[in-house]
Length: 69
Image (cartoon, rainbow, N blue to C red; front, side, top):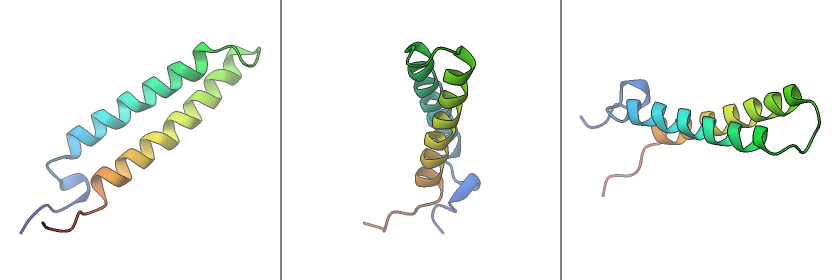
């Protein structure tokens, strides 16, 4: 009974969309600011940071259960 958690959860599509949007926002913010000259290095750092943020979002939304209230 209850939410099965993980990718079988009814909130899985929302979690995947939230992770993708957070990835795009963080990637765009890092790539847009020219803090280092080569554009590919900014893209690499943005992709790495966005991937970490998206993984954290997915983990907390899909794989942690709130206690029943």
